Length: 189
Image (cartoon, rainbow, N blue to C red; front, side, top):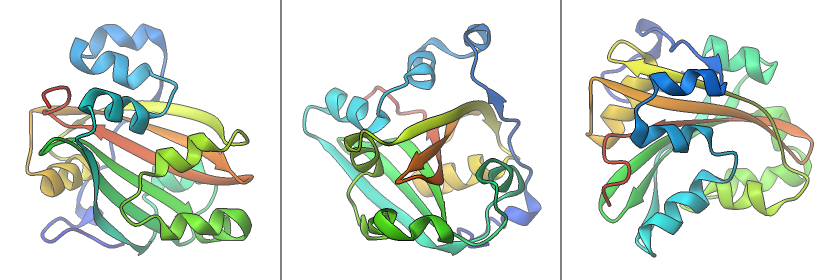
C-alpha cells in the first residue's frame, strides 16, 4: 500500500462506516449534514459554492491495495488505481477524496479514468447517464483512523473529528469506490 510519509496504513485502524440513513443525521454537525446526504455530484456542489475559485490538487496517484473494508465493497482484494485529491475553494481545502478503481475496471471505456490529471472525477461520472450509485456509507473519523490521518496530512487541516462518506459507483458497468472526507474549512471559502 502506498502511504503518505510517516503514515503507514497498516498501523492505523479503519473507520466505522455505516449505511447512510436519515436517522443518523442528528449525530452529524449541521455544517456537514447536507453535504453527507446530497445524492448529487459533490464536485458540482463545491464548484457552485466557490464562484469559479475551484481547483483540484492531485496528492497521490498510483497502484495500491485497497483497505479491508474498501476491498469488501469493491468485491476485490486485487490491486487498484488509487487517486487521492484535495478539492479547494479559493485557497482552502474543503474535501479530501480517495478513489480506488480496480485494475479490471480500467478496461474498455473506463480506461480514461487513469488520465484525469487535475480534472475532477465527479464531472466525468455525473456526465455519463449510465453511471450508477450502488451504495453510500458515512463515518465519523478520528485521529487513529487511516483516512483521517491521510486527509489531515494531505490538507494540513485537522479537527477533533472529520465526517466522510463513501460511495460505490458503477461506471461503464465497472465498480469504483469514492471516499470523500469533509475538512474543517468546508463552507468557509
